[in-house]
Length: 215
Image 1: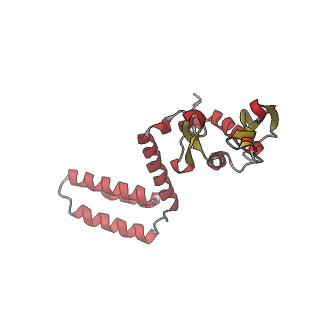
Image 2: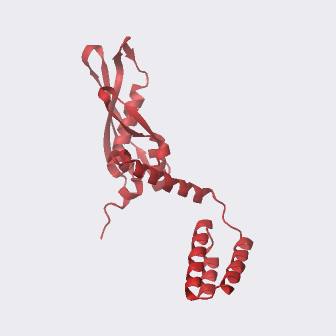
Image 3: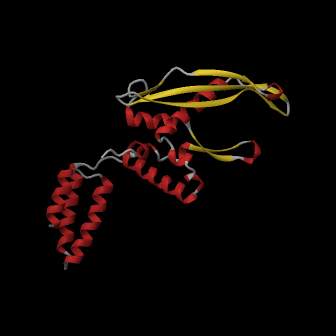
């Protein structure tokens, strides 16, 4: 059976360190995902942009707004995977906006609309789904994600233990087993070393050797 949510679940978790809070007129506030995080997630999953995924040529529409304002809208599509699946997104911004000083132009409005369109396209396949679904309104969820990504970063940056170090650990296991006076003590010892082996990234050969000692 096809798991229709597999890609969504892979891309749907967001590192809180790559988000920012924002406020808009009318008191609206929320959480925004930094665009580079979305691009990184696509690259991790499919490969470099232009090879495993990419953006098709966008189209722009300039629309006059009230009181001299000018709006710009962008429609962009992204493709991904070997089948070059296609999804679309629409974004917008103000090329000319009004504030207390009068009308002001924004020379980055087209870029902002383009980025907005890509982000809206990417969320169609689940990128940053937890943010878009409002889960970041729950501080407990945000803390859980912060801890989860911190653990992932530690795993990626921690050096793998050498063979000599793992051999010394096996010797240490043997010493501890000699002090175990019951099956319960052996089980507790095994659980402790299972945690250490997973944490430190032992190789399969040493994990198997440790398992034989406990057996």
